[in-house]
Amino acid sequence: MLGRSYGLNVNYIAYLPFIRLFCLKSISEIFLSSILIYTSRKLERNYGPNKYFSMLLITLLIASGLEHIVKRFMSNSHLNLGPFPFLGICFYLYYYDIPGIHDYHILGIKLNNKAFIYSIGIQLLLQSGKHSFFPFFCGIVATIIYSLNFCNIQKIKVPKAIARVASYVYDKTLSDVDRVQQRRQVSEDSWVRRAPTPSGIHQPFGIGGISDRPPELPLDQVSEELVGQLVAMGFDRERSCRALSQSFNNVQGAIAAMLQG
Image (cartoon, rainbow, N blue to C red; front, side):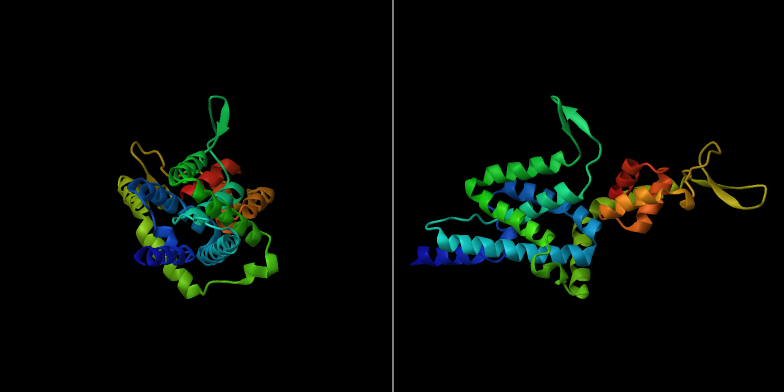
């Protein structure tokens, strides 16, 4: 009786798309999942809090529904608990919406900065066993359905108040590195000395009298075509213009600056 009750509880939890994300079996799974959840913040920055959490909610519900439907038609099927639908969602979004930069070659194979995320995800799948692949693919299928705007599901939005709370939790939980970088930047800026120009206007100068302010291209000389490319990738237009101005119309440099910012 206890075993049957335990099985019912596990199956019930398996259909709760958010609780199951935190049901992990080992320390290594917790470690790998933590890295993936941290890197997912890049997606939240790319889409914006409201769109990202709306998409995440809908795709997780669709993935959970797909698992439930298939399980009803499969006898003795076993579905692993864990963040595997979320992993499938992130894989799809990373592949299509996050541009790859910093290309390099290993054994003649061309890779980029996204290879690290893929390798961690694959390691988590292999370590969790063959039953984890099905919820993973359900996450991919759910994201495809959302991307195709099936039945206008993209019109469903999470209330802005909930999105702000979720974004706040994201920032407080996952922004330790950003705060360290900000403190480091403030420390570096404290070395900057201000020297008066002949006109009396003070401008920042570094050690040796060399200006620390990087040169920028005037905004009216930023290529509209390149701005359109970055906007199509999901970046904000104003940030794209500023990044292209700082990188002198270098798309890769602008992308790197926005992703790191």
